[in-house]
Length: 185
Image 1 (cartoon, helix red, strand yellow):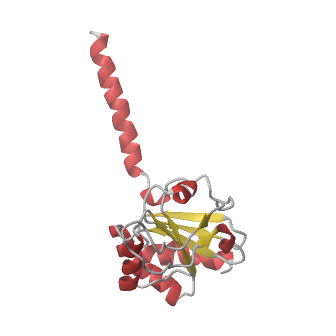
Image 2 (cartoon, rainbow, N blue to C red; image 1 turned 60 degrees about the vertical axis):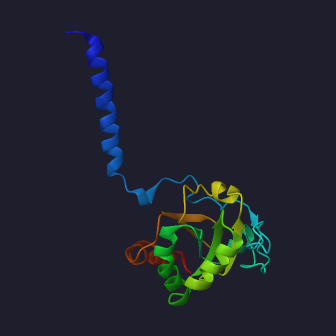
Image 3 (tube, one colour; image 1 turned 30 degrees about the vertical axis):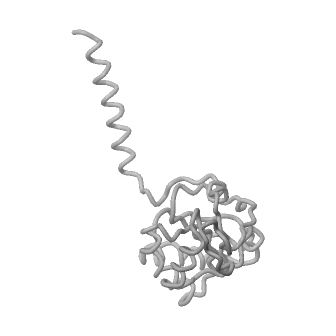
């Protein structure tokens, strides 16, 4: 038997096993090196009054910095107007803010100012403050793979949980609200 035929088959088998294991992992639980560590330091401006597209509206969202995270349990939600899953999760964020009194901060990632303001005007604004991450640098510091992503931050400013993808009702009742209660919102 010729070994040069067995090597490609062995490589294919190893790749197939790796894919099979990868498909069984929960995509909502991507690892984060930041769990139980302080949130990254950042200082984001409000959604800009002028974003280079001819939009001369007022600044929106007040800006958001790491200093805002101390003293209360809160959520940090990374979103964008162009993000379809963000629209899916938005009613859950509105419920968290309105019905449960959860403090939510927003990081608006790589968005046009007018689009972000219009989107929040149409769908509601659950955020205590919003910072514009125009370059995406702050999102990278948080370890964000894509939008939406949401983080539970404790009163000491430490990241305690990371949720990848849109928050659904089961995520609220099964994980996020119990964790917020445990941390003492």
